[in-house]
Image 1 (cartoon, rainbow, N blue to C red):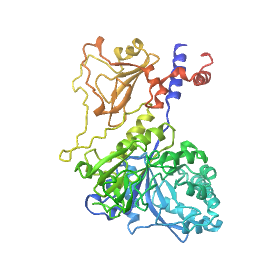
Image 2: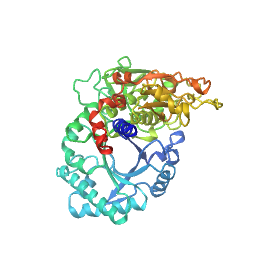
Image 3: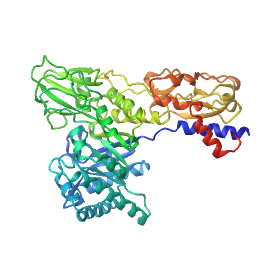
Image 4: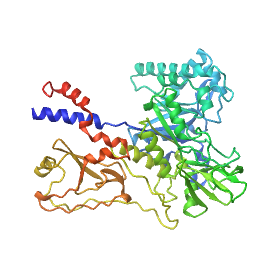
Length: 542
């Protein structure tokens, strides 16, 4: 009976601690190869473990058929899909559309059954030929920008027929079904006229919100590219990321299918008067081109953080919008840094239990570690924050301290004791490890020889668990965190009978306001699951 009771308790624990498996969707752009110097970006620069879904942007729609856009796309397809040999869990998709493609070609294709069928057949053939795992529809936008009013219904019809064809092809080929996703505009006017949200949601595996480009150099006052909340000068609560998420949820998108778009670039302005420099300041146009991307009014993150470490300009933060901006003379740029990205991920993706986060785009992140935060500082922060949430723990916000321009990057690293006492057994597999949790209450305990691990006691059973990559265990706050926030010392060990652990009462986690995921440690908070598991696995538990 004891083992039956433990089975019930542990299965209840597992059922209650299972969190969402968040998607990390990253876009690779096929025109970044034409940039010069350190801004040049090719498939070899992609970290294959940074994302769960890697989207190749863009293919081309030509005469209602899918084809390549760049002259060397077919070579690049192979290089991108070869990354799946390194990370076998990686999924790749081909994106069709984008801003420059416009709407009319897609509107024409979706207008009739015959043209839709022709497109669907050509797309399946193209995706299978080049080993993609799915299609990402980036039609910008149905019923807008040259499209027809009927697109509002034709687009979900196209998606339904695509899904049906993907399912049939999978049955016949005995292969995994091709994925079907979409990237969508978030402005209220576009959302209302372009997208039949409840109908679309039936057929899509996930929907990526393009929650950026909300303000830019085309306007007459400075504003943020992607503020989390409305800024200190906004009179309407609409042009911000939180509004877009809520609006799409209210329109009928299942939360688990909604993926939050995050930008690795900023939008810049030229101030009319350099002495008037706040949010909402008068602007005469877009900011000047940066050092790496030849587009006025646009700066990749690595260009912005390079200015910061070289002390070019002053960085401010709008506390209402939770978003920074940098001012250098008459130059003004609003952008996302690691702290603002972290806040979006925790406040929206994790707390609202969305499907994940999307990164536009890989080539704008600091992939070469120009700024000293490590390669892909934005992408890796997203990855680590979501990985921690999946494990039911949280991480504290990253610091806003700017690295010194003259110093090489420094990364914290904790090394386990290379010569642990062979007579100790702190993590199970022997008498001390087997009895530790029988002598301590349920909770999380610091690992005695490895700061990146921790011990979890459940029902007198011990489970050794790893923190997500780049994180270490914080025994004070009972969570995995960035190494620079944690004072972790390899614990001194004596004899087999006095292995030292640092203990944390797990009940304190329930009162934490830092992450709602932490309540998942409490078996008692889910009695219904306890009853269900007990009924399934034993008739004797109740």
